[in-house]
Image (cartoon, rainbow, N blue to C red; front, side):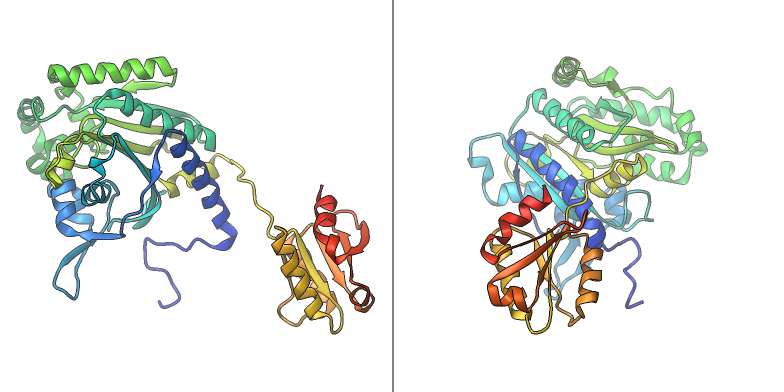
Length: 420
């Protein structure tokens, strides 16, 4: 057990880490393009933050949180999602006093949920998220949807579409809950145990059930869209106008509710078609009451989360080739007692911005060349007794065997030329 990672976690090895770096670089650029700046919050928070923020009727809080008592007898929880921590940080550091909207993003942020590992979602998984505080207009909802859509397109995720819904607000949702419970009450005894449990705690989540039988029983359920108040209705119409003008494929899906209690008005998902059916790649929405529920500031907000593991899984399934970076540009070998000359050359090349290395294991010259081949370095440098005595280095282009001998002071430029 000591040499095995815990269930639901995985190591990201050097041979694979470049794939993560590639998508994260694209994510950073997409966020920066829209004016979002990076925020990093702790991996654990006070448990009360999630009880109040996510909602104690959700599956996340009821079943999935990693909660423990620290040595100070305080209850802390490894964060199961990113928004609550972002709100806490926004309030603690008085970011609301700065010019609004406040646009934040987080990346490679570990999240923890105690659930059975599934495709693209482990017990420890990582998210890219964007959050906007202080903007009430539907234009920012559309901005986030479009940013996520174009990012996924740019990465190479295919068969992509957007699904949107409005789940109302404090003014219009109570009446919908009443009508939904009346509708479900006649059918709930036929539904799965999870739906029966949700019926009492959070009836809206019954619409999110993945069981075919439950979906059939709720297909004629009343729609929140029919009961929206004027403010929510206008907001949703404005969102649709923004998306209509963008030209991206989207549809209104009244069954989208999302799994967390803090959402209001807009909820959305970006989905892709796979051989196994639809898969959600990104999800989010508006949470205009959450800042006030956690603190004392009434500030509208909207955001999304995108699982990095799931994105990478989709890219692999679709055969998207992520460019592999060069490990080294040059590998320096040496003969005899010229180790120090080789070491000095490596340092000189690195100072010039050349990715260089040498043997650190006491290999023979033949073994050094074998290792150089394994690294894939396009150029190999050789320092023998004659080269060391004259301040020279012999360079060999591995692709075609071309060789040239140059002064050590000109090695960096010569290596760049040989690579072209």
